[in-house]
Length: 297
Image (cartoon, rainbow, N blue to C red; front, side, top):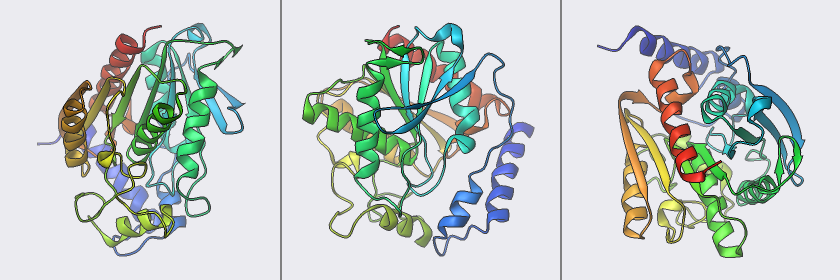
């Protein structure tokens, strides 16, 4: 039987979707954006937020003033490429920063369909390069750099890594992917093909000339050699579980390091519900420990 906290989190998510008018039969961009609202959960009292221009990309540094010299993590939010932002992911990034003992650069990338692929991946790469040489206190380089993202944001995070490898730019030392939407092909991904709404969401993101098999769009199709160690978190009730499991296998096959953790009963991006849901907070503790151990700082 699900815990009372899990029942509460699921009910909150369902209410938000119902109030916004979400339907599996079609994509309403306005409804998608309205459904991903601020959850109003408690934030760590020591965490501060500071808007910055990350090389032309709007972003927010999130972390305690005392952790300015700790690891830097660039974060890409989920929302199916069409929705989401700091409000919807505030508790996730704040608690990740708190547990990290470092700072999280939350990227406010352009949403589809107003801006389409590969704009968002280019913005992620630009912000990643900028974060290597600018911290929350101002200019200054770091070797303790990592990247993370959830759902669609996980795909953007891997896309930024692929651009970094191709261009010979700074490569983070670790990555954390939460419930990654890593295959956009509805024929092969249970998540991307789960409803007409999901199919239309992918179509809103990809221009007509881009196929779902483009490695930058669907990282599961990419050459994954020479990428940093990655933590992949998924749950037994996560629609993207298959994407995460297949990606971990392919990363290992390419000679990389993949740590896959599958959380019983957890749903898609349950990490947003920290600290209400104990498993959400525990998942962020796990992610922070992984990023510290591999990125340093």
